[in-house]
Amino acid sequence: MHEDLRDHTSLSALSAPVGYLSPRLALLFAVAAGLAVANIYFAQPLLDAMALEFGMEPAWVGSVITVTQLCYAAGLLLLVPLGDLLNRHRLIPLQMLISVVALLIVGLARTESMLFAGMAVIGLLAVVTQTLVAFAADLAKPAERGRIVGMVTSGVVIGILLARTFAGTLTDLAGWRSVYLASACLTLILAGVLSLLLPKPAATAKRISYLQLLRSVLKLFLEEPILRIRAVLALLIFAAFSILWTSLVLPLSSPPLSLSHSGIGAFGLAGAAGALGASRAGRLADRGLGQRTTGFALALLLVSWFPISLVHQSLFVLVLGIILLDFAVQAVHVTNQTLILATRPEARSRLTAGYMIFYSLGSAVGSIASTHIYASNGWYGVCGLGAMVSLLALLFWALTRKR
Image (cartoon, rainbow, N blue to C red):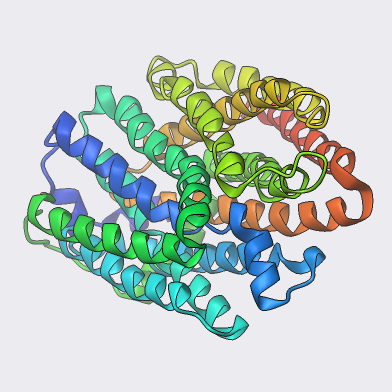
């Protein structure tokens, strides 16, 4: 089966020249990936405003994020593997152009149905982020792959976090709809730039059908233990990540804190600082230190929930907890991707797709669970849930590390 899969995957993306990725182009990849993924996280600091305008119950407002994340998971399975089949030079700008249409739908939505439809398409097409990560891994030199993946993935995590700052500030200035209209303009500009600058791979010698491509994602799960293990870790760490960031707006926007949208969004800067600090995790994985990095980061993730639980006692301590949590999540995420993408060079888009499906499922479950727990048990209940998920991730790593 192993050889059969290799025989059927000599596809277009593989013919791009190794080492072609210049530092400037790598930075452009990071910016584009960050903006694409930010589109599905703009809603988190805006949930209260959306709930007020569309009359949604507080316990169910997290479903806006859940629908987006579930569609993102569907896009990971149905669209990301196309990077191993089609020319990424054309695929990436096309997906970004469709995202522009979806962003306009959300920005102009007048009904709850339009809002959810637009968010669903945004989630589906935001997977262009993962196509960019796989493309960057293909173009990088083997000795620099961890560093390049870390750089682009840092752009992704920073995009997720700064989405809150951008959305909160712009909402206070011009309303929540302006966030999606502004992002539509920025995405359109980036799509044009990428269509001009992305490397053009040579023609392919072999092709497989779309159904064969999708079936091969399942084969990779069956054949690669590291993919299965790291995918489960992704589900757990991003469930913890989403438990924090989906529900954080609720205590911060309520009395006695009653922060503005821009004030709430500013906490994304703390998260971005933590993510930047973990960007070197890929280099540690290149040096064979991936397991140690993972264990240390998961321990930090568990510890981070204590200062996070003190939101009503000290915002400064909350910021420290956010930095720890985002550092830990980013370090594990970069390490995961570096280790996984080294296993099958001919199938990096499909490896990314399979891994990120679990990321998205974790985010979706964390989003809906956190708002329900907050409604019934308050902020301490949310932090208890996050700590339990983090502990489960640490135990799972300890039990599987020898494999």
